[in-house]
Image (cartoon, rainbow, N blue to C red; front, top):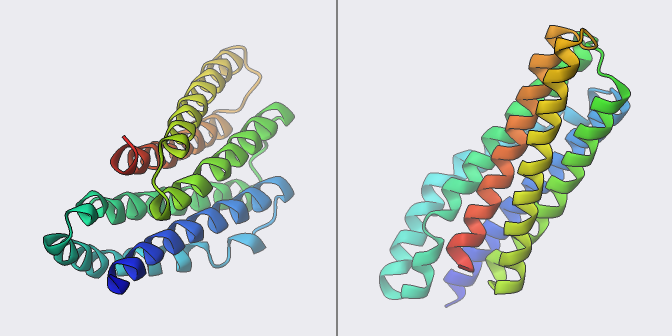
Length: 197
């Protein structure tokens, strides 16, 4: 039983690392500063290296405990969240290094979505240790809200691009950032769907 608790605690801690990384990305984005990005790739790579072994341990443990079977796909979702977090880091780094200008509106939209992402990753981490329908519903509703907002922002952004109010380089970056945010939110929702359907 202790081994199973340790496995779940490891999954929880890994998801917490994703949350910390997203918080660092938000800080880098707001302050236009590369410093908070320095260890994001390192942390995400370390997580991804643990995933195969952790998945094997969960699969092995699930043979004796059917309850653990629900956790078998969770490491893969965490790995995909780490991939998208790294992608976000690359995009934000590119914006800072190449001094690509975003409008105040675009900055506030991305900042808002990054905060909403932090607000969904935290309960996705908690649901690993305490699966329940309240957290599950909150995560699902939050993910739907993030996707809806991101899609609205993308549509409004396309209109600004057509009107010539936005540079093409900034436009591509903005859309890719939105896609990475939606991807992380989707994996949070999938964790909730597996653990609290």
